[in-house]
Image (cartoon, rainbow, N blue to C red; front, top):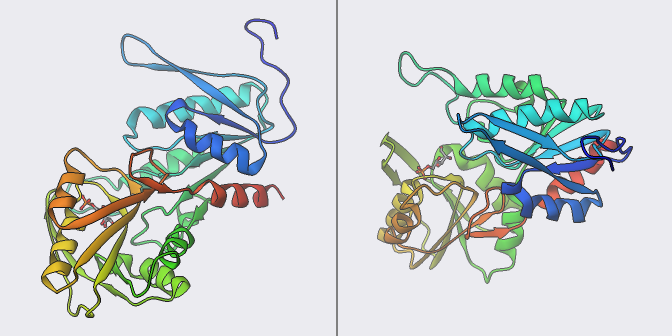
Length: 301
Ligand code: R5P
């Protein structure tokens, strides 16, 4: 290939990934049987980014990047979508295992924006499609209400498989009412007892979870879509232990884990905490690439 020229677009889909999501992208490439190449990012001294896609561009490009700590990443994926179209891609799908800004889904205090809508419409303008895992949709029924055609994957089968691999009985616990449909789905697949708590958050790091009734089981797994400060898991674990559960574990989809979160979770009495691979973290244990590979290849056709 001549310097400065891109190869002709490939008729098969192709993965174009950012380095911070390389592990997931390689796993997806293997499972979907789709080639992959890296998107280069250069940061200028003034903080602006330039991105460069390397050929061949997929006629259908799957642009893979998970979007925690999202602000610069959102700009860079939009730049990469433009670069891919200029390189010959006719369709660009954003594959973002973690979709950010979904929690600010209403005006909680006067003067705020509804970030969820702003970011979703920004993504819808830059991309022809989106595939993501377990987006936080508290007040919406489906992600397609925000982004037409978006593929929203449930992580429930991954958690259900894990629960089935464990000795019974195990109590499945959701920390708040929002988690109920999800906890119910996992428990239904895994065939175990479940409860959900009531959560009151009065500040970023001030959370209280309580349960009306805790069945007398020795072991519980708390599941949640996101752990950020870790306060939700810590408080739920404290309540379970006070209620007589001896061994409490926790599993989350998106391991945001801000500074000190794992320590807080442990201090709340959680013996083990693990996560899906939607955000690279040392707690990653459940691989979601197979779910994406199946959905994206089905989408082709
Ligand atoms: C919120 O409703 C989510 O489902 C999580 O429970 C929440 O984001 C966890 O946050 P943190 O770890 O800061 O308590």
